[in-house]
Length: 121
Length: 421
Image 1 (cartoon, each protein chain N blue to C red):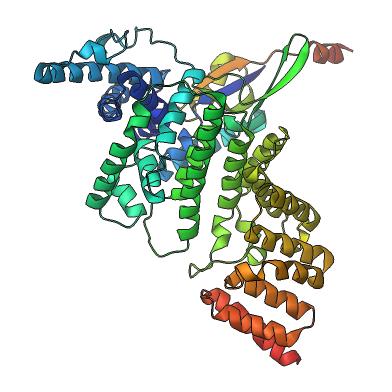
Image 2: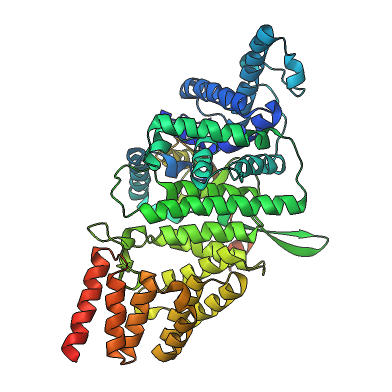
């Protein structure tokens, strides 16, 4: 099964860390990427949430506004998709990533119904 | 919860500082008291968070502790001067430090913070403050830099900077402590003033980057941080987006702007492979976001011009037609002789030297003693085949204080003209 590792934190905190810490954290990412090389799907580091736009609807019409969807303290900073045999294994992968300045959510990826149909056809 | 090292905690505290200080200043109606309370809370955070991890909502944690510390400080003051502490505080300062994790902190959403932070930033733009005082105050109050760091940035002694900041606070502090709900027009005026102050800070850093001072605080980075703060608080303001984009796009070229000796290198001779591509990408996205509003302003148009330059991987790939169009737009919004000069350069690339020279004639009175004007004019004259005039213009440029690299370039051009004729 595929699992999403969603990384949350405050915008800009990583850039404020001393360069040594930044290097250590980046190395942790690289180590994880090396270890799970064959099982990684999409990897994305997102731009700061100030670059985001939000698409919602109001009274039946689509509205596009500036800024991230949630005005929350924590933003989605990036994500990994990893193929793992169990939640436990996905958590092991997440544990290799830095946690000093952010938090992670590990969440199984649901197979889209369309994909399922295509698979059985 | 996550277990942060002290660097992560410091970074997180830095990120919450503007909102925390602004909210505390509103609650306490006193900037100094708010700063002291925040300082106390930050020390408590360093201690507690390194043991228990960074809380899910660091801002709420800091606010709760700071309010309690302020209340205690006011009670002590009350004993001394008999001022009723409760009158100075708004209601709701109930919890002790022990119940922080459990306490429900008043939900302060972004809508409440944004005018608080803007008010604090606007205080730094007080018209009675000199530009340097404005920047020093913003670096101290909003960015939370230490006085020694700010003193280094402006090449003065820490003692002199301390006095300067104290004086500035005395003059402007009342603005921060005055509770008000700005009207739309007032808010727009504040945003304009704050944006101008941030851009001033950026330019202060940008201009001195080639200088010799080795350990200057990075004013460009601080200005970009303030620009990000402004956009995060007012995401739908196209000029705030434009300002942030402009700063990012200019800053993206920082490694190419100076040569090995710290001399400035003009855009068309910069090594473009050392430009910061992720920063260019972000700036370009922000320009696009800003322009969707169809309310162009000077920051947006300048950012759009910078984006066109940054998009060209070689100087000769520059989309001069787009740049010419944008400078024409900028001339409509914010006409100046320097903008006209840059517009003329775009016209040169599109229509040739003679057309550009005609445009330069119109601004010669104003810019005749400006190095970049004379060197541009000289290059145009040379291209138009008017060699004696070109030589005269290059010689005049030599007298207008070129740096070493610029001087070498001019001398080389003079030698080339001499060889051909």
